[in-house]
Length: 296
Ligand SMILES: C[S@@+](CC[C@H](N)C(=O)[O-])C[C@H]1O[C@@H](n2cnc3c(N)ncnc32)[C@H](O)[C@@H]1O
Image (tube, rainbow, N blue to C red):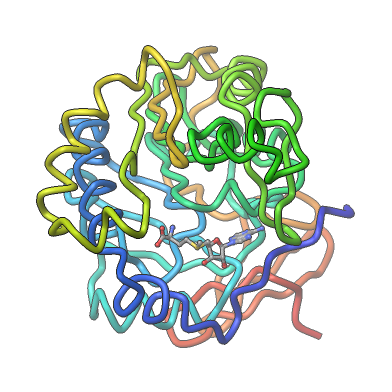
């Protein structure tokens, strides 16, 4: 199966350079507030797609277990260091276009700051829907092209692409901004019922961030987030959806499936998983199930 290219974070210091030392305390706090508002009271098994170094994972306490999925092994290693030894967490290196799980396994999913790397977003949303049970919650964050800064830049002819048109814009290779209307259309097409939208990072403007403390901006943002159902003019939008159709629920004990041929179950050995259908073998390395490519 050929899938679109992946924006590879292998070896990246993203967590340190972008978050810990990148002056983004305000955005981090604003996202924490949005997540708290959208997360359900309780849940069993959550899939965190594009988990990175686990920045958001501790915010998912309401779920009994969390599967952190990321294409980058080194991001997952950083998440392991951050979260420590804990049976609550399962680490999976895999491509979001080929989720290595059986249908209807999870009762919740999140995808934060990850859709913006997806050239074929509907294909990923289809995968997310496949592994979710009916009536599951899905929190999706996306980067919006219809943000105030882009609108002003376009109107003053400082930017050649229109923020008003429905197609996605690739502003840097494998970094996409989406139109809110298009995201809503895709969610509907992939069997998600949109329940709520929160606009986030209203004050992501350098001069404002330099003048006001992060906690004050996050508080202001927390008030402005409520306008998200009315209009979306921020660079980041959080959506909460629920899966609609009565699709299957994974049987007790089922978990992984082969990302190459979709066969399940996989036979688990101490250091690998075997697909008895296509003979693919996948490494289990220091607590990370590695589905990026079969081992020889
Ligand atoms: C901008 S980071 C966000 C990390 C985390 N969600 C956060 O907000 O801190 C995007 C993450 O998506 C992962 N990613 C990109 N493309 C992917 C793909 N096709 N499958 C799985 N993960 C992917 C990257 O490895 C990276 O860790």
